[in-house]
Length: 182
Image 1: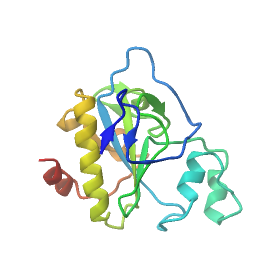
Image 2: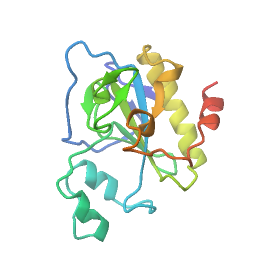
Image 3: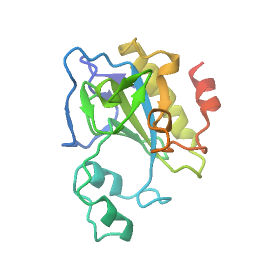
Image 4: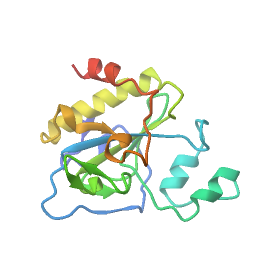
């Protein structure tokens, strides 16, 4: 695994470009990784639905749950499927729309300075070993290129939006990730 010279893209990753991004504010330093969990519909894995959500092409009639997502404009930098496959939607150098209203270390608007990594999963289902392995490789690579990301700067969505978000949830094994990163 490697990053492009400008630090924008990870190789190898399947690219599915999301329009749901914009420029980071001038002077932004990437110093946070936010781990998310996503499954569409909830508790179901595989299929084209996450790609469709992040590219504004999710058919609200395809599943009853999708009607509530109509008009939602969100993205993440990267998704790690349960088999470890990487999909990148937004270059790391741009701001993905993944954190929403958020705060870390007293700073609001975490999207300005964070990289969002989605794991295909939910709060109750244990994440898969290939996901942890791929996540650890990606975090190590990002820390090399973005040295302001310290050990305490890898957090869950629940940590930056408490009360509003629960992902990656209690099924995520933070100790196992720490062991892989050691």
